[in-house]
Length: 299
Image 1 (cartoon, helix red, strand yellow):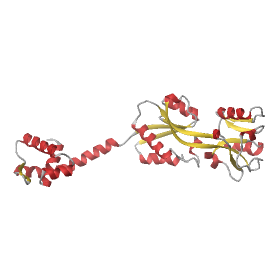
Image 2: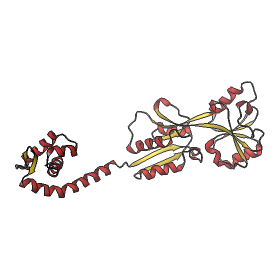
Image 3: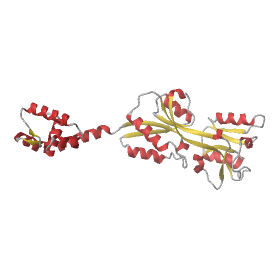
Image 4: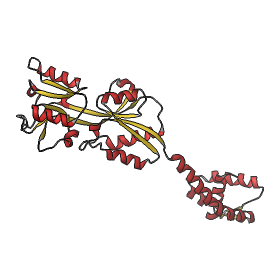
């Protein structure tokens, strides 16, 4: 005896006709008749008598219906529990991301990672901070399942989902002579002190190309963002720092100001990145879809 046969039998018993049961089960009448006939053949007894007005249960039909009324709810509940348990995603998933991408104003705050953990409590989310290059390399080396990066390399090996664009700014002291500007151009950087992160070689080259023939800025490289030291450079030495909106909340607005850089080249696209064409764990897949849904298109 199969569960499907028992379901069909009991629905016909309750409805009093195969036609009515067909509508309630959304199954053809032929399929229901065939299953009941197979059940009757297996039991060796008739469960219904047929007439033009429908069907009527035999003695054996009433006996089976009494059993089915008790057994079916338990079986249905068991099946639902098993299916629900099997559908729960579990495992470990690793995400690479930069600290500044999770700062106030970035819309990629830590709260969104907490939301994921609440939504998928069986998935252990391990996230680590790193530079764009180290995060991308972690994906390529399969140490990370996903990363959020603005500088993807070896893109032919990666699947990239655009998340949002960032505007670049120059952070400076409010006493700086450019602090009152609505925006500044690259030409305004000529001969000035400009703080760049150690990996901003692309920005350095871009500035040099635009300034062609003019005095280059005095570039001050920093390998790590130690904000107390950066503040000293900006406040005490008149330096400007290339930065993004997401870092705005890290500096006292009464002492610092961020002036946007003019030009489309001073916009950076942020990507959700994973290895292309590789099998993925269910945990990594749900994180990817959750991040894409909640981060993509944010302004």
